[in-house]
Image (cartoon, rainbow, N blue to C red; front, side, top):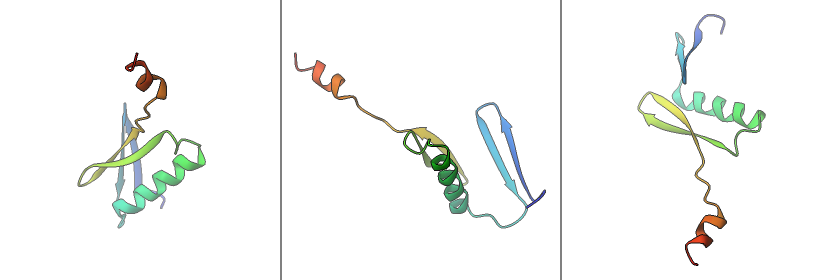
Length: 72
C-alpha cells in the first residue's frame, strides 16, 4: 500500500485517504480487528455517522447500582 493510503491525525479526528479502491466496510472491518487486538472491543464500537465516515463511541453501560438508587 506504500503511499497509496495515507492516515492523518488532527486532534481527535483521524482521516484515511486512499488512492486505490478502498471500501468503507473494509475500513470498519480493519478498525474492529485493531480494537479486538488491543482489547478495546468491549469498550468501543464503530458507528457510521455519515455516508463517508465512521466514529468510535463508548458503549453505554448502565450500572445496576444507579437503577437501584431510585427505588428508595
